Amino acid sequence: MDKKKKERLELIIGAIAVAKKQKDGRVLSDLEFLADELKEAWNILEKKDKVKKK
Picture 1 (cartoon, rainbow, N blue to C red):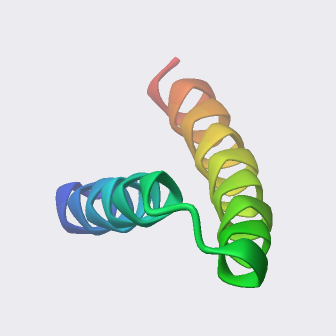
Picture 2: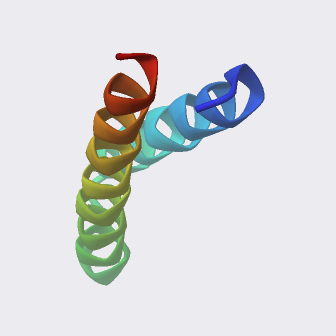
């Protein structure tokens, strides 16, 4: 994963973490779903990176 994409994902994940702390009902559940999806995508991208580097 290139550096720009990785930085962008880290910013998005950070923003979601801040928003989750605000505890706003429906918005919170939507953000939790989005955060889970992003983490899963992040893990897939990192695995692909490790495979490419070998």
